[in-house]
Image 1: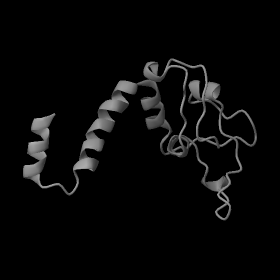
Image 2 (image 1 turned 90 degrees about the vertical axis):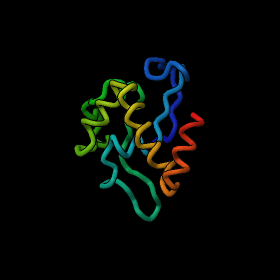
Image 3 (image 1 turned 180 degrees about the vertical axis):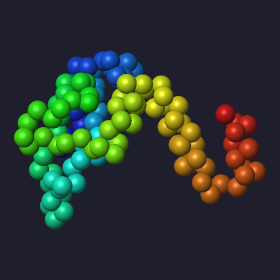
Image 4 (image 1 turned 180 degrees about the horizontal axis):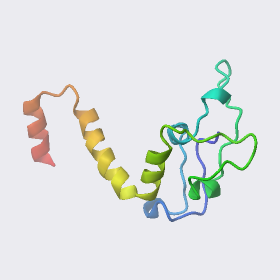
Length: 115
């Protein structure tokens, strides 16, 4: 699987126009790579979709060695792929929870005053 893919597409990310990033986490959420993973070497023996194929998500894997979609997450991945604003809004809520874990409530309210 490719960790990073750079291409000419500007439809997803106008701020970083021309760059499409597919991180390992993106691939693992979208594709079922578990059956194709060699746990000793870490090599995945199925083919990831091209950026063009990801743009047509959810596509039918075209090659016999293509990684199948992750059925459990396919719908939510597609929803976020088509609605970046929804993704960013949902991500912001979770991000705030993650970065504030362990901080006492009185300190959180002081931090919120700075924003």
